[in-house]
Amino acid sequence: MILVVGLTIQCNGGVTSTYRRRMAASDDMPLNADVFQPPPGYNAPQQVHITQGDYDGSAVIVAWVTPSEVGSNTVRYGTSNTTLDMSAEGTVSQYKYFTYTSGYIHQCTLKGLQFGTTYYYSVEANGTARTFSFKTPPQPGPDSSYTFGIIGDLGQTFDSNSTLTHYKANTNAAALLYVGDFSYADNYPNHDNVRWDTWGRFTESSVAYQPWIWTFGNHELDFAPEIGETTPFKPVSNRYPTPYSASGSTEQYYYAVRRASAHIIVLASYSAYGSSNPQYKWLQTELKKVDRTVTPWLIVLIHAPWYNSYKSHYMEGETVRVQFEAMMVKYKVDVVFAGHVHAYERSHRISNIGYNITNANCSPVSNNNAPVYITVGDGGNMEGLSTE
Ligand SMILES: [Fe+2]
Image (cartoon, rainbow, N blue to C red; front, side, top):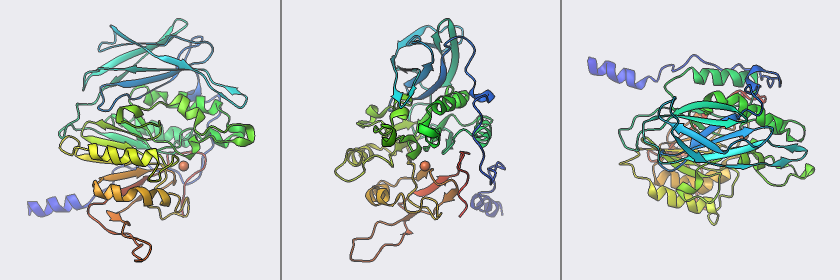
């Protein structure tokens, strides 16, 4: 009888949260919204964000902006909030986009951190120091328990604020998997990059304290030849670093990290993916490095889903699926998370890799070696939900 009850419980996923996105689209918060306000103090560091800085989680990349003049590139850090006895030097850069000129964007990698340890860190400019903290993950290993959050398509509306507030209320999640489409600044005239700054200040209350592992979406392209902006991903590439070289990647937009018991592969929907291209060759190499005795979980992040039954963005991920899906099956990826379609959807373990032009085997079939595909649901951006 006890066994029967146990099986019953295991077969019922149940309701994990009562939190629901409103059906109607929400407006972006106004520029004077409280969550967009700069911190007090002239030229105080703002838009502080961190991401994993190496392959295994013993480094963290810290990035921040000093808006008015070049602030210090130094990050002071330590394991006590009263004694920041270590320091690292970063770099600073600036970019222009049409008539916009960014603030001074600082980036600094803290290396050689102890696993499973809380660190405090401080960035400073013109006499204003701001201190934050993060906890490094446990050393990669099969018994390293860890909880990830996941958000995509966040934007900066009132609903986006609701999403982030809801996420921060969950104290279990120790790092966030972000499946692309950040600020939606490109929906403004001339891709008003001021809305990149507001998004940076809005998200700081989470991403300054835990790493967000970035996947890049179409709203990060900011490709606008009509205003002379012909370099794809210019704002995001300047603002949001990734540890791509640690996994042998040669581009910021696809990379891998190991974190606790998970091997996480970040793919790029909007970088070349053909079999002669760097992303394809890198993925082949990276998958061979996966050691399930160390990281039993193999997770893939990509922006545009490969399985999507909604009208919204229907088949947009198809050409990338055709290139990459066989590798997902060969290496038994557990789950592929995507965003882009503003709705939730989850597949069974299916594959569609049997087609060879002449055999007509072009329908997905059940395949226990295949991943589960999850489109994570909308973060709250101004475009609203996909409902059909
Ligand atoms: Fe998208």
